[in-house]
Amino acid sequence: MRHPQVRVHTSPPGRPGKKALWLGLAGAVISRLSGRSLPAITCDDLKRHDFPMSTQRLGVRFTERIRDIFRFRWIREIF
Image (spheres, rainbow, N blue to C red):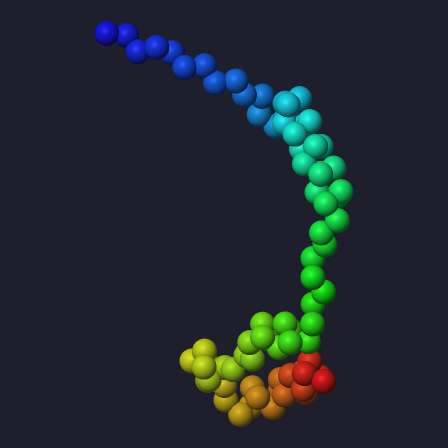
C-alpha cells in the first residue's frame, strides 16, 4: 500500500513568499488603522514591577572590604 505524497508549498529559506508579504502588509495597515495604542506607564506600574535587589536574599555574602569599595557606586546608582 502506497502512501499519498503530500505537497507543501513553501517559499525558499531566507525569503518570504508573495502571499506572506501581502498578509504582513495587510496586517500592518489594519493594526495602524485600529488606533489602539499601548496604555501609558504610571508610577504604580513601575512600583509594582520594581524588585529590590538584596544580596542576602540571593545568598551572596560580601566582606566589609568589598562593601567599602562598592558602597559609593551603589549609593550613586540609587540616587
